[in-house]
Length: 368
Image (cartoon, rainbow, N blue to C red; front, side):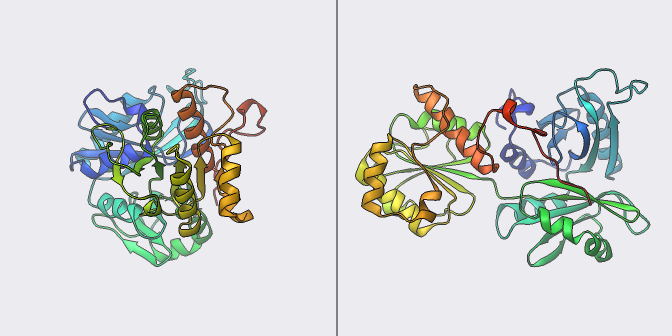
């Protein structure tokens, strides 16, 4: 988050990681480790506290914030990680006073030490990872003991004791299931409980185009937590004209695939049929991006599809016309429709109405 007036509650995962990367050793980190019942934030949500002030992020809707800040201050003083349980279901408890949640929240509170440098580096590049941290200690462990697990094996981190291999072996199914997914869960292993935080790279929203309708698309994409890249086919656009973009580059449509991967979601919106065709062809043939949205009416895409002779597999990755059916027609309406569809695809959803969905809004990972 940038600026002293930034709202910590509005922070995205990208904002939290950026803040963690620059935070000093006086900071502490609170993470939602587990939730039973309902709560405003789900496992994996993080809050960075510096001194007596919430810097970035949130782990509740605010009702518990003063108490969490006090715990963070204690952790900073002692230098030792700890877990804290808030039971909002017990009317006899200080917390069970109709606070808008009706669940039990377990928080891991820990120093912002050098172990976080290793976590941030591992989650930003390389293979998918899971950060495994002890949240309930047994005879062989202490709260805060930590390792990073990826396809290559187990990596120890500075300033923390390791999680014993014997415990990791017993939690292997849980950790393997969570690696790189962006989801978080716990695993009870004997007398210990492990938190598996499946950190994935921050997703990228790649916008191909240079017209004025980029503005709301960039703003909403950034607010939704995407790293926004603009690939313009012509000069005349730079960081000063779209300050919310992370990267602005100028290049031929055939170079649009630069730096893309499975965490990239592309929207082709140059409004030039020739340029759009080249960009779509490049993205579908030279990358594994899971989503290529194409701006414009259906008839326009039909012409493009005939020119490219797309396969069934390639068509599965294409959204044309782009966006969800929200009914609006202003540039902001179109951007909201498009970014909403990208968010839904990123989260494995179809974007339907929640009232028509059975079961919980946010399915939880089953604990082992």
